[in-house]
Length: 217
Ligand code: GRF
Image (cartoon, rainbow, N blue to C red; front, side, top):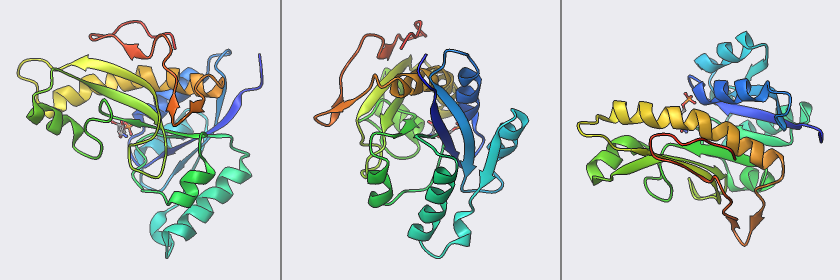
Protein backbone atom coordinates (compact mmCIF):
# COMPACT_ATOMS: atom_id res chain seq x y z
CA UNK A 1 0.00 0.00 0.00
CA UNK A 2 1.12 3.55 -0.56
CA UNK A 3 2.03 5.68 2.45
CA UNK A 4 -0.90 6.89 4.57
CA UNK A 5 -1.70 10.59 4.19
CA UNK A 6 -0.91 12.56 7.34
CA UNK A 7 -4.25 14.07 8.38
CA UNK A 8 -5.33 16.61 10.98
CA UNK A 9 -8.92 16.88 12.21
CA UNK A 10 -10.16 20.32 13.24
CA UNK A 11 -13.05 20.50 15.70
CA UNK A 12 -14.91 22.97 17.89
CA UNK A 13 -17.30 20.72 19.78
CA UNK A 14 -18.36 17.20 20.66
CA UNK A 15 -16.40 15.49 17.89
CA UNK A 16 -18.65 12.62 16.87
CA UNK A 17 -17.51 12.85 13.25
CA UNK A 18 -13.93 13.06 14.49
CA UNK A 19 -14.50 9.84 16.42
CA UNK A 20 -15.88 8.16 13.30
CA UNK A 21 -12.78 9.19 11.34
CA UNK A 22 -10.44 8.00 14.11
CA UNK A 23 -12.22 4.65 14.28
CA UNK A 24 -12.12 4.15 10.50
CA UNK A 25 -8.46 5.14 10.32
CA UNK A 26 -7.50 2.29 12.66
CA UNK A 27 -8.03 -0.13 9.80
CA UNK A 28 -4.76 -1.26 8.29
CA UNK A 29 -5.82 -0.50 4.75
CA UNK A 30 -7.20 2.97 5.49
CA UNK A 31 -5.23 5.46 3.39
CA UNK A 32 -5.13 8.30 5.95
CA UNK A 33 -3.49 8.45 9.36
CA UNK A 34 -5.02 10.80 11.94
CA UNK A 35 -1.93 12.52 13.32
CA UNK A 36 -3.50 15.22 15.48
CA UNK A 37 -6.81 16.77 16.51
CA UNK A 38 -6.86 20.56 16.84
CA UNK A 39 -9.63 22.61 18.40
CA UNK A 40 -10.15 26.37 18.48
CA UNK A 41 -12.07 25.85 21.74
CA UNK A 42 -10.09 24.53 24.72
CA UNK A 43 -13.33 23.20 26.25
CA UNK A 44 -14.37 21.15 23.22
CA UNK A 45 -15.43 17.69 24.50
CA UNK A 46 -13.88 16.20 21.37
CA UNK A 47 -10.35 16.96 22.66
CA UNK A 48 -10.73 14.55 25.58
CA UNK A 49 -12.39 12.03 23.33
CA UNK A 50 -9.40 12.18 20.97
CA UNK A 51 -6.91 11.77 23.83
CA UNK A 52 -8.90 8.83 25.15
CA UNK A 53 -8.45 7.27 21.72
CA UNK A 54 -4.70 7.72 22.13
CA UNK A 55 -4.31 10.68 19.80
CA UNK A 56 -2.52 13.99 20.19
CA UNK A 57 -5.10 16.71 20.75
CA UNK A 58 -4.24 20.39 21.02
CA UNK A 59 -6.26 23.54 21.62
CA UNK A 60 -5.49 26.77 19.80
CA UNK A 61 -7.85 29.21 21.49
CA UNK A 62 -8.93 31.73 18.88
CA UNK A 63 -9.78 34.23 21.63
CA UNK A 64 -6.08 34.48 22.47
CA UNK A 65 -5.32 36.09 19.10
CA UNK A 66 -5.97 39.68 18.10
CA UNK A 67 -6.84 38.87 14.50
CA UNK A 68 -8.05 36.00 12.38
CA UNK A 69 -4.71 36.07 10.55
CA UNK A 70 -2.82 35.64 13.81
CA UNK A 71 -5.01 32.68 14.79
CA UNK A 72 -4.52 31.07 11.41
CA UNK A 73 -0.75 31.60 11.58
CA UNK A 74 -0.74 29.63 14.83
CA UNK A 75 -2.92 26.95 13.27
CA UNK A 76 -0.67 26.74 10.21
CA UNK A 77 2.37 26.42 12.48
CA UNK A 78 0.83 23.39 14.22
CA UNK A 79 -0.12 21.83 10.89
CA UNK A 80 3.44 22.32 9.68
CA UNK A 81 4.89 20.97 12.90
CA UNK A 82 2.90 17.78 12.42
CA UNK A 83 3.76 17.64 8.70
CA UNK A 84 0.08 17.55 7.80
CA UNK A 85 -1.00 16.77 4.25
CA UNK A 86 -4.79 16.69 4.61
CA UNK A 87 -7.13 18.64 6.88
CA UNK A 88 -10.61 17.35 7.76
CA UNK A 89 -12.96 19.87 9.36
CA UNK A 90 -15.42 18.13 11.66
CA UNK A 91 -17.75 20.60 13.33
CA UNK A 92 -15.09 23.32 13.15
CA UNK A 93 -17.03 26.53 13.71
CA UNK A 94 -14.59 29.25 12.65
CA UNK A 95 -14.69 30.92 9.27
CA UNK A 96 -11.30 30.89 7.61
CA UNK A 97 -9.70 33.60 5.52
CA UNK A 98 -9.49 33.15 1.76
CA UNK A 99 -5.70 33.05 1.90
CA UNK A 100 -5.68 30.19 4.43
CA UNK A 101 -8.32 28.29 2.47
CA UNK A 102 -6.48 28.79 -0.81
CA UNK A 103 -3.24 27.54 0.68
CA UNK A 104 -5.06 24.29 1.51
CA UNK A 105 -6.94 24.10 -1.78
CA UNK A 106 -7.69 20.49 -2.65
CA UNK A 107 -6.26 19.34 0.72
CA UNK A 108 -8.97 20.51 3.15
CA UNK A 109 -12.42 18.94 3.39
CA UNK A 110 -15.55 19.55 5.45
CA UNK A 111 -18.77 17.78 6.32
CA UNK A 112 -22.00 19.72 6.17
CA UNK A 113 -25.38 18.47 7.44
CA UNK A 114 -27.46 19.01 4.29
CA UNK A 115 -27.54 18.04 0.66
CA UNK A 116 -25.62 21.01 -0.70
CA UNK A 117 -26.21 23.37 -2.42
CA UNK A 118 -29.47 23.27 -0.44
CA UNK A 119 -29.31 24.64 3.10
CA UNK A 120 -25.80 26.03 3.32
CA UNK A 121 -25.15 27.67 6.69
CA UNK A 122 -26.69 26.89 10.06
CA UNK A 123 -29.94 25.30 11.34
CA UNK A 124 -30.05 23.02 8.33
CA UNK A 125 -32.47 20.46 9.80
CA UNK A 126 -35.06 23.01 10.90
CA UNK A 127 -34.84 24.72 7.52
CA UNK A 128 -35.23 21.40 5.70
CA UNK A 129 -38.40 20.66 7.69
CA UNK A 130 -39.76 24.15 7.01
CA UNK A 131 -39.09 23.72 3.29
CA UNK A 132 -41.00 20.44 3.29
CA UNK A 133 -38.29 18.43 1.53
CA UNK A 134 -38.82 14.64 1.42
CA UNK A 135 -35.16 13.77 1.56
CA UNK A 136 -32.31 15.41 3.44
CA UNK A 137 -28.75 14.35 4.15
CA UNK A 138 -25.14 15.39 4.34
CA UNK A 139 -22.30 16.41 2.07
CA UNK A 140 -18.53 16.10 2.20
CA UNK A 141 -16.89 18.81 0.11
CA UNK A 142 -13.58 20.54 -0.46
CA UNK A 143 -13.31 23.82 1.39
CA UNK A 144 -13.24 26.96 -0.74
CA UNK A 145 -13.50 30.60 0.34
CA UNK A 146 -17.30 30.67 -0.15
CA UNK A 147 -19.02 29.03 2.84
CA UNK A 148 -20.30 25.51 2.07
CA UNK A 149 -19.65 26.07 -1.64
CA UNK A 150 -16.68 23.88 -2.48
CA UNK A 151 -16.62 20.93 -4.89
CA UNK A 152 -18.78 18.06 -3.64
CA UNK A 153 -16.94 14.80 -2.92
CA UNK A 154 -19.80 12.61 -1.66
CA UNK A 155 -23.34 12.86 -0.35
CA UNK A 156 -25.63 10.65 1.71
CA UNK A 157 -29.41 10.82 1.62
CA UNK A 158 -31.84 10.12 4.45
CA UNK A 159 -35.64 10.27 4.37
CA UNK A 160 -37.70 12.89 6.15
CA UNK A 161 -40.19 10.88 8.23
CA UNK A 162 -43.73 11.86 9.26
CA UNK A 163 -43.69 13.87 12.48
CA UNK A 164 -39.94 14.51 12.34
CA UNK A 165 -38.53 17.13 14.68
CA UNK A 166 -35.28 18.91 13.87
CA UNK A 167 -33.62 16.75 16.54
CA UNK A 168 -34.91 13.48 15.12
CA UNK A 169 -33.85 14.47 11.63
CA UNK A 170 -30.45 15.64 12.90
CA UNK A 171 -29.85 12.26 14.55
CA UNK A 172 -30.72 10.42 11.33
CA UNK A 173 -28.40 12.66 9.31
CA UNK A 174 -25.61 12.35 11.89
CA UNK A 175 -25.64 8.56 11.59
CA UNK A 176 -25.22 9.00 7.85
CA UNK A 177 -22.41 11.53 8.42
CA UNK A 178 -20.49 8.97 10.45
CA UNK A 179 -20.56 6.55 7.54
CA UNK A 180 -20.01 9.07 4.77
CA UNK A 181 -17.08 11.04 6.16
CA UNK A 182 -14.61 8.16 6.53
CA UNK A 183 -15.48 6.91 3.06
CA UNK A 184 -14.99 10.37 1.56
CA UNK A 185 -11.71 10.96 3.41
CA UNK A 186 -10.46 7.62 2.13
CA UNK A 187 -11.28 8.61 -1.41
CA UNK A 188 -9.48 11.94 -1.07
CA UNK A 189 -6.45 10.34 0.58
CA UNK A 190 -6.19 7.85 -2.27
CA UNK A 191 -6.20 10.71 -4.75
CA UNK A 192 -9.50 9.50 -6.18
CA UNK A 193 -11.36 12.79 -5.86
CA UNK A 194 -9.42 15.27 -8.01
CA UNK A 195 -10.98 18.66 -8.71
CA UNK A 196 -11.37 19.13 -12.45
CA UNK A 197 -12.95 22.34 -13.73
CA UNK A 198 -14.24 23.19 -10.27
CA UNK A 199 -15.97 19.85 -9.71
CA UNK A 200 -15.18 16.36 -8.52
CA UNK A 201 -16.15 13.73 -11.06
CA UNK A 202 -19.13 11.56 -10.12
CA UNK A 203 -18.16 7.98 -9.35
CA UNK A 204 -20.20 4.97 -8.42
CA UNK A 205 -21.17 4.99 -4.76
CA UNK A 206 -21.44 8.76 -4.40
CA UNK A 207 -24.99 8.51 -3.17
CA UNK A 208 -25.91 6.52 -0.09
CA UNK A 209 -29.35 5.06 -0.56
CA UNK A 210 -32.26 6.37 1.44
CA UNK A 211 -32.61 4.24 4.57
CA UNK A 212 -28.93 3.42 4.41
CA UNK A 213 -27.47 1.57 1.48
CA UNK A 214 -24.09 -0.02 1.68
CA UNK A 215 -21.26 2.43 1.26
CA UNK A 216 -18.21 1.41 -0.68
CA UNK A 217 -16.59 4.64 -1.76
C1 GRF B 1 -22.09 17.88 12.27
O1 GRF B 1 -23.47 17.85 12.06
C2 GRF B 1 -21.39 18.37 11.04
O2 GRF B 1 -22.04 18.05 9.85
C3 GRF B 1 -21.41 19.86 11.23
O3 GRF B 1 -21.24 20.05 12.60
C4 GRF B 1 -21.68 18.90 13.31
C5 GRF B 1 -20.52 18.44 14.14
O4 GRF B 1 -20.87 17.38 14.99
N1 GRF B 1 -20.40 20.49 10.40
P1 GRF B 1 -19.73 16.53 15.69
O5 GRF B 1 -18.88 17.51 16.50
O6 GRF B 1 -18.94 15.85 14.63
O7 GRF B 1 -20.44 15.58 16.59
